[in-house]
Image 1 (tube, rainbow, N blue to C red):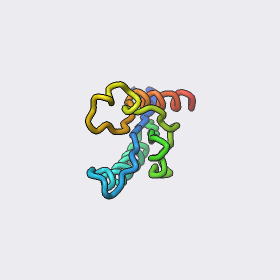
Image 2 (tube, one colour; image 1 turned 90 degrees about the vertical axis):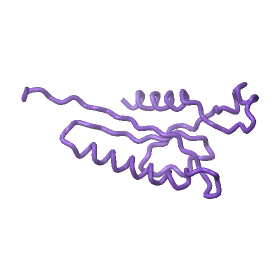
Image 3 (spheres, rainbow, N blue to C red; image 1 turned 30 degrees about the vertical axis):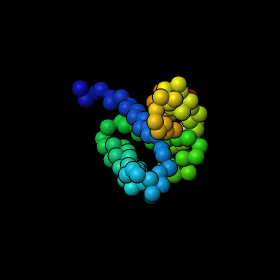
Image 4 (cartoon, one colour; image 1 turned 135 degrees about the horizontal axis):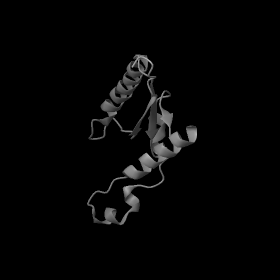
Length: 116
């Protein structure tokens, strides 16, 4: 067993960034900095272990939200579609500009695969 080399474990952590205003009725204005710091700490902890771990931090956002992405997080290309573009939004009382999860995942996969 001593001759076995540990394989590389590549982790890509992606989140969707929303530029929340302090007056928004959400906790995101306060939670986002905590989330960023937690991601940074988790990445550093994982990479300091005796295992062969690589952690990439990525953010996906609409163009108007990208200014709040910290420098230590890789910016993915801006999202182009939202729930507002769907027929489903017509049936909502208060539709919001929400991204499609598939667009976030596809953007991450495209970026990670092209980086190899």
